[in-house]
Image (cartoon, rainbow, N blue to C red; front, side, top):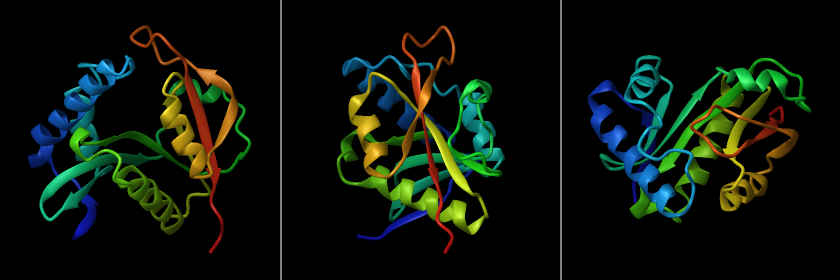
Length: 173
């Protein structure tokens, strides 16, 4: 099996948007209202692609999963008391695995890639947030060594529940 992680390109926009919409529908069916059919907006995906921050996990040329890596911290992150006050930090956004391929370790592969990317680009820590009612996702990040912050954040009226913030200090190698 030839898995490869590489930057996605603008010609993959429709495929990436479809991946997010199907994942959002799956989340709704599982009781998680955090993506639905509205997140991420197509314009956000376009920005991620134009900024070269959207990465895909591919099997040959088949896109299986995506992740966005950048240093953009959502405004509510400013209210969080982070354990690791270190700059710069890498922020993980919009991690998604095609529904048919979930449970195969692809999200973990992308998170390990994020950690390696962060170290190679001299980030001292990684930050992210996860929907508070998705206990499986919260457990996933904890199993990877991410620590919860004490505060939860709210990202707007479209979301009924809070988001839990996580961080992880990267070891020097």
